[in-house]
Length: 267
Image (cartoon, one colour):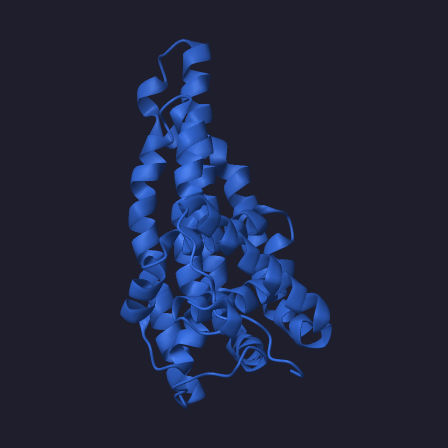
């Protein structure tokens, strides 16, 4: 790709491409700062979803000891120290799975609630970077139905992936070190797929095409998605970063399509 024409420069190192993906989120945050009026609209649906999901996660934390005991009845007669270690591992596994699914379902629900707002943010980003080649006019309700259907599919797949991670969470040390890293990578991948939905829909592309294009540059996609995932784990991070993540995902989509990710002068 030609940087002189404002297209994303090719990089060969997976590490460099990963950090290029992180940079797309940072650029999304920059757009957020420069357009506070538009971006603040995106905080409203995220705030509504945030209240619901914080309540749900707090409930999980409250009952996590009971759940850990429920799935480890075999440890009832074990020595106190060993039993406690097993149930702490089980509790952490529950919290890890809950966090992974919580972040993904939060994104899906927030995108559904705020579809008009996030579509506007994504459209504005496209306009600032050269427009939307091959734009397709999709009616609002049709777009919402497709978005919800694709989001449900992604959440279902991530839940299936999360089950082995949940089981692996019982493994001492590995379950508390390696598994969270794998979970962040998987969660980041699905987050990128979800957040990039709007710009691909405007180009008439559904989930299979979106997945194939983002997979072609997986390190960049993972860099963006993992950065968003980590931000979403920070208290209030999901609410504050959501509009910027949508903006960054639009840049990610443009990059994957070989379109300019440099601002057009005067826009």
